[in-house]
Image 1 (cartoon, rainbow over the protein chains, first blue to last red):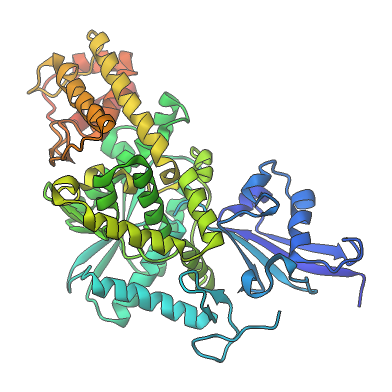
Image 2 (cartoon, rainbow over the protein chains, first blue to last red; image 1 turned 90 degrees about the vertical axis):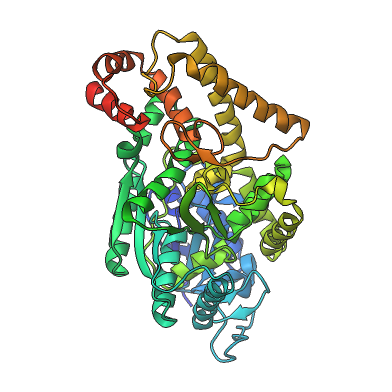
Length: 105
Length: 421
């Protein structure tokens, strides 16, 4: 087991505008980044807010410490509710997709 | 968490939890059941008849893209015999609509459907970019929504099509129900829940085949089917993103996903209790502002309608002051017309609302453009009047040059554009 996890994070449905209009981000995370706790999607969301998002409108992504209602999270194309939501432990090469349903259609 | 197995096929790994019943199903079963439910909605409500030409109001966004894709699939699978056409409105917003129209153009090729684009500039003489330059970013959604409503009908009329379908989903309907409930607007509550809206004053029928489809499932359908849709927020309505009714609906969904369809159902049941003399025998499509806004601006309907009422009132107040710099009015009308009668209509309406009396809306035609309207002058023409008044120099010019007798407001507007350029 290496000391790092490599995961793919994607933003679509309009969320990409919070990330310089870049849809796909490859992240390499140190396994010990969260005080030795296993890295979860909850940690990833915090990491995204603190490290990845340069846009100041954090509330368009996270509200009250949780992913904003109306944003879908898919872990390897599965609804994250099937995977334990923010408690899901990240695996190497996981694909985490955030899709906004809030934009005009 | 151990992987869940699809509750339908009992074979593949579940990837979707259905909001309406918490059923866990796999990708393929989800696509199948989503399409089947739309088909059931279409059949149960007799939305179409064989040989019908149907225009799909297409914005390039998720809802209308999914609608076009599903209708194409179902039309072929169940042999509806429909002639489907994509109808898009170009509001004239650089960096937003021109990009989303590119998506619609690709959709037209992907789905092999003809595409018709109708522009605000040709219909009203104003692009939204020009409107925003004039009125600012606040409240411009009102103009856009009112203009769009008519634009779809006019586009359909141009194509000789009598049925327009739009991508309104269950979340949209739930949101409209909540807003009308909060405003105590029973007539609109009744109308907003119906899947088909039509009016005696127009021969164009509207329907929403996705009325019972969750926004979440629409997005998942688009994702799993890898549909090509456009999702950048309108550059003029960033605030719409935080619309309060929208937020309420999404918060409720988070707590109890079935809430959305429950609200839709409650809205339908309440609508059934509204006496016909209150709801109007048929819906007045032109005034149903809950549907007028196809973009993110729908989120701020409450505010924007209030704002519009204020603006119309302000326009009317201005009209009585600005007699010397006025657009030439429609030839049949005396020049002083717009102060007295229009104001009185408006006063009556707002008084009625405040006292809780319900004024039955009678559909007629706008005296200026001929579009169906419950008032003498339709909302689009009222808004245009306000816009055009703020161009005093050009309107004087037009008064001189263009007096010879254009019969509609639209021609007057066209005149302004030419003389201003």
